[in-house]
Length: 314
Length: 165
Image (cartoon, rainbow over all chains, first blue to last red; front, side, top):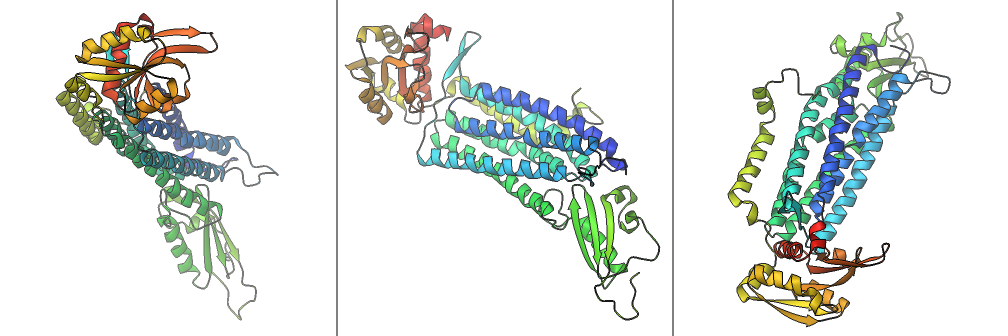
């Protein structure tokens, strides 16, 4: 491992992910501007615009944490480097998603309850009076395309890096067509005179944002309170960590195995047994492919408080 | 520059994003089928009612003659006659919000607090100071987007100020 917190094996992948996230921010800004220019009074458009703006949070948090992970050196003040900054970024992004999602849902429900009828007028474009709804639809269609492509590019990188922040963003981007479809339904419904379609579509989009936020929050909180390693985009336990626990347990059947995750790395504590006589690198215990062995950064042995007679671990 | 993937090709691109393509095609065919002029429609059917009853109710705030060019343009477009009633601002806007009248024409602040409750058309004329402009404009009931568009078109036809917006 290098002087920073990033394992050597994933440095190149991290560089690739950083470049992709700059592109992600660029395209997201073009969407935010395009949508912002045709917002009007539509609740659907405001919610979709807020969702698109929120889409900037994960890549920005990823870039900040990647910068700290790469540039931040271990020091007296930060002896473990900055490997957990990614987890903190994930938590911040999750809080932002959940909070804004809840606010948007509240707005949509209030608009529906108050039977608000959104007014969408016309503008003059190239000498023609055009209903602003058509431009809203065009902006919605445009907003579907970049996230779809970027999400697909992010996914394999997130898996290689075991990066929850990137993985959540990738899945959100890939699923963006669902909110896009809801947004199109909202604006078309508004055009067809279904006043309720606007608030209902806004509600659907905000539920999606809230759901993403809650899922991410559960996973991010688990990491921050030293929970067992979680899967990349759900609150389930991660499969490789479970295999690792089994691998260590098989060798030390009387020990209690405790795993936690610091950023993309796993740290294991083996309680109630002595360390093997021969010193081993933590990677020795990794049960999966060697390519992924960097995931296991530490294996510590904590001997039993009272020595059992004539019994030694390992 | 665009991160299209390792292979790039059009066919692979189309295959990968066929879900989106299907959605785009569905929307495009829907648009072609309905035609650009089919939308928007009024939830409460204001314009249809005006065209079939051949009359629309106008609340005029201030001198009625200032509203004449817009009223004439609307009468021409809808084939309906305007029943104009002089009113004061608050009762007129409330009547509009309740659906008791179809149009209000009068002087309003550029950032009128009513702008969330009714929909304003483009200003027909602007008076007042630079910091506090007062716009003479029409207002329609919120959400009646077909009728709003008709009023906006008529405003642009009746006033150079509205066309410049």
